[in-house]
Image 1 (spheres, rainbow, N blue to C red):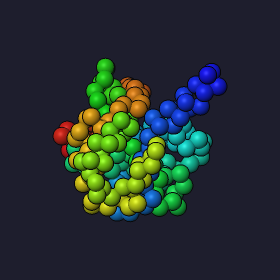
Image 2 (cartoon, rainbow, N blue to C red):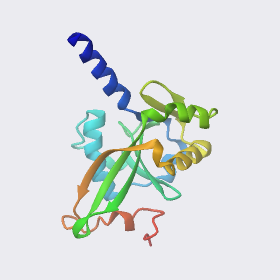
Image 3 (spheres, rainbow, N blue to C red):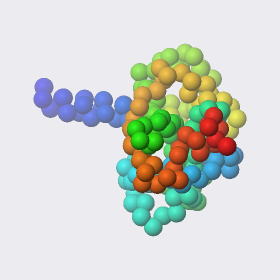
Image 4 (tube, helix red, strand yellow):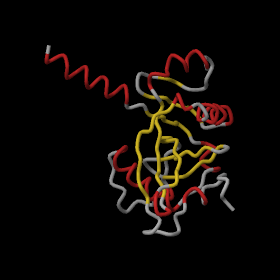
Length: 183
């Protein structure tokens, strides 16, 4: 029985490691922009998620922020020449002493049946532990924005504290395109 527990635990972890892959960022990449503050955090995501050392990489060519309505997404490529990569929904909430808390979300795997029921013709491919978008285009952006407004579809994957005292240029929510405080 003990031998069976380890594979079941590993299978459960794989199921919970939901990820959104995009084969081609297309126009979404052109509409997105590098963000100095998010790029710093993207370096750690690049290291942990892609298992690659970001040292010496031009992360402005690998990471961009796409804002859809009031929602923010990090687009992350493994190599600058790649057409696609990974997509992460995130937000930044105010923290103490003027700092911010970067929150990265993942899709809740328990919502798969609800998604299949609510979006039977969605332009995505679902596998056991991933969601793949062929092209980041108007229909997929509309779907992402709609689902982003449904908290039941999301779980916080990671929280990272960013203290603006160390880098006052990073105000995050005031600087992100589409934010109410943005100039």
